[in-house]
Image (cartoon, rainbow, N blue to C red):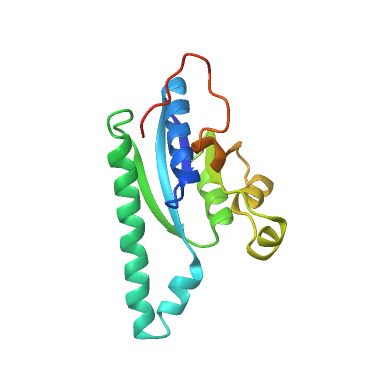
Length: 159
């Protein structure tokens, strides 16, 4: 069965990416895996001090709750979705997972940031497009806001 990998981080853009993934999965008879990537530095620093261990546990719990919520919101349309919490640099982890899991598509959301913020903070979606050996679909945040056209006569699914 074909597989689609979807990055989820709790933003409106990632919710739209999840919705888009369900549309693609339905049309392609594919299985969806929702993944949340925790930065490796959280895990590294957690070993250095007790308070970081608490912080890491809180991050893990947040990630699991986020994925559980995403699956709960999509269960009616796609009951076979999987979830995964991974650690590392997001673009690298998503690229590795895409190859390991032999997915047909990676879907991520993208926020509109100014050039300074993009320079300082980087862009996971931009880096992923450069590194990933599989096709990447970037769903802009403005798609979730209804600023991009939809197919005439098509009602957007509730996700």
